[in-house]
Amino acid sequence: MELREYVRILWQRGWIAIVLAVLGAGAGYLYSERQTPVYEASVRIVLRPARADLGLGQSIGATLLSLAGDISSFSFIEQALADAHIEGTSAGELLSGRRFSVVPDPGDFSITISVRHTDTDVAFFATQAIVDRFVRLRQEWNDRQTQDNQVAIEIPDGVRNTGIYAPKTKIYVAAGGFAGAAAGAAVIALLEWLAAAKIRTAQDLHQLQVPVLGTIPPENK
Image (cartoon, rainbow, N blue to C red):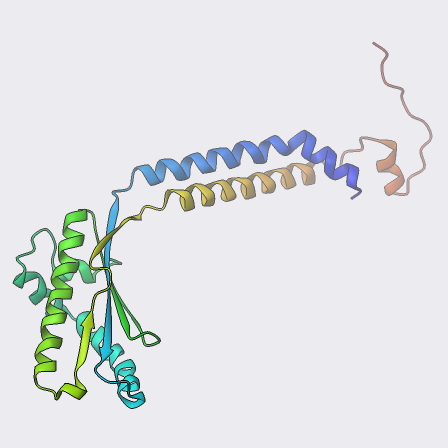
């Protein structure tokens, strides 16, 4: 099609895509507002070797994956919550869905622990309980090592609330708006396809290679 055809389509039917995009964005917003907010608390733990030794550093980096697996175990979380007398959640609840995550980073010898819950206080204190148990067990491990082989545990920023994890209202609104605009474009394409068989101008006949014998002038008003 020529450019003027696209302009005509946008001028005549573009409102369909706009209306559906607005409705889709509104639906995304309403859906987001109906969700129960989930809050997140997180902590970053850094392991520092007692000496600047390449072999010891590589060993710690390789051990991070194992430590992350230990923290993510049901028994570890259950005992941590029990030690701190945390109520309002359980190991099973945290390990189901996307309520708990442990991300090791061998690059800087760190582990990031995140807990998500509908109660911001539960998320915070559960995270604190888990990190407290981890630090205590690592300190017991250090006590059995020589000073040169010990690994210090640092928590640079402590446990902190990071705000609402879900729902992500902006993403829902953007996704709804995009889906609405796409649906509008599909409707416009369908309408144009249904109207394609209609002859509206002499140009349509030229495109079909049909000779034009005459045209009816527009009615003068």
